Length: 485
Ligand SMILES: *Cc1c(COP(=O)(O)O)cnc(C)c1O
Image 1: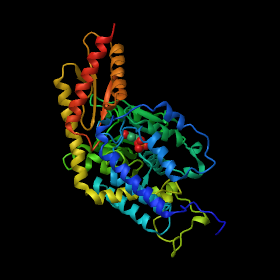
Image 2 (image 1 turned 90 degrees about the vertical axis):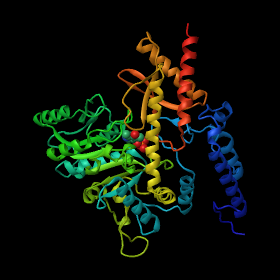
Image 3 (image 1 turned 135 degrees about the vertical axis):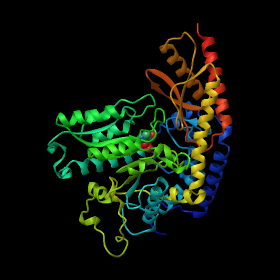
């Protein structure tokens, strides 16, 4: 007997049977998800069990797994449930989840090197370009999600448009302060990105929107001209393909023209909206997106991949690489061996060690084919049309904004109640929907008014789920009003 230790199981057969058991458990769990509440609060016992000291002695894989079954699994976020429409979060799939397990079992590092996983990511990036109508010569990178994809795109934009070696000299050397433009409906991750890029949040000019929540083009043009005259250096324009609040898409073709005329980098945040391009019927909504210099989108939202996986594509491969490439001796590439190959993704982003996110995308696209994704994306939009009809047919409900895509904002309305009282009432309705495990919409504020917000990237939803949702909002609204003094 050796005195050397390993983390491998002492008995592989025991791990094998645990593996079979957990796979069976999780397939049962997913296939019966509709029968359970969408969400429930954690029990006191679970909270206690999730606040324990560092384990010193082993308890073994079986008992560790039991703790997962008892204290974690019963309290899902809700994202796998057919009536989850919170924030913008995808549903995941069973086979996609298995792919994550396969990826972890191979445990490659996709920072670089010559091995199969890097070829898979390269292939997935090419497929992403094809499905969004983006040119194959573009480069790209899989990242944690939309926030990181936008940060990478905006970093390339800043470096490419600064006009000097900003990597070496930093933003302090800028002859004129740089500015970036987008609408007031931009996702908050853009401000984070601009702050991290050292430009300061004030450099992000938030332009007002029109009644359809699209960036106002005349105001935008004026703002750019005004900034130039005042000594600023406009560098980039961010277009929205699908805003978080209402699912609005800016006039991307007009933005592409403007960016060209003004010599600005055109970045599109298509976190979920970009995927409209996968459906031939919806593709015209995002026309102009294919002209972006960089395009950020998520695969874990409207492509239903398990969290996390997002993607950034950059038209100019060299600009992309020059924003991040740094090759010290210990990362040199060679012509042979595992340090060979031309797919060193660490040169295109911030991470060096990178997981095999690509596998779930590659396997899922093979499993279903892209046409099926297009049909389900279209189905989500049609289901939202259906929800809008239900709202419009219900006198107690109000549709609060145009719903051009997969986001629907509504509220329960009582004649004579103040805005403040309606805000309170609708917030209470939302709490009840969550606490009773009925459905998970979330919320936003539109013009100071609290909206229940349904963001639909759920492949498990059926129309009857929206029937139930509308019925329950009305029931809860009436109940809450009656119980008021
Ligand atoms: C979700 C979202 C983001 C952020 O993406 P993450 O994957 O959550 O990091 C950015 N922009 C829009 C429009 C989004 O919907």
